[in-house]
Image (tube, rainbow, N blue to C red):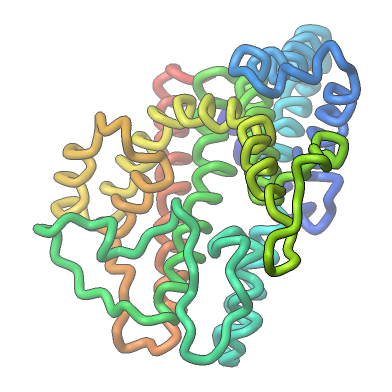
Length: 355
């Protein structure tokens, strides 16, 4: 039933994606808003154990629902619930729309539109200024260029231009989104069933929530400012305010419990996904890199996935002035990897390893 539910969910997702009602984040945000409204559970967002407890609530609910409908209509109701959970978890409407918009803008040479879409996807730093002619694109910390990710002994002819920096940021972000919304969901489905899918999707939403809060400027409470300690300097400027804001900074640092927890939950799945990249891409080139960084705990899951992607596929195309090919190649190898995972699930189903 796992393979059937997965195939139906992927088909349904293609048809119903234009609606936000089929996005897991739509319902997760409502649930998280209710949780954060209570003083007893508000602090749960700041600790890993609290994040697990929050994620366990919808997980337990889906487990109870599956138990209640078990056996109904010869198992059809269980299939419907599983398909619904998968469909919601793999829904990523904003990424699909942004990808299509980016390609259209790139092909007509609209650099400003490309820049705005890239920033919306998170492929550029949130505080980066609007692009002007001749300026360099500012990439976020977890997006790196091919020449920076690959080791010195890994040969890659990569043109380092503002265009290619922009497109590589978009391509890497799309490859990461493809993993989080498709391959990771498939792996959790095979291992833990629909309940595992809901658990992972909830923690994923919490991590994205933390990321959005992290890019917002800290809000300082005016009541916490000691007005008596402020004074005017010789230039008639207020002195002492910056020091007080800096002192409050530690208490204003956004929580990262879900992000750190998701790092470990992604540790094994992302290496399984990158193993698939070696099989659907340049195996002789990607496998040594995969083995070398297999147990590297200092490298983020996204950096690991991108590193193997760059080795498995010839991402750079110096003959293409806008580097659109760089983006499409990132997406193409990610799609081939999804098909590989589906094939593995099918084989496991035939052998009876997956129900």
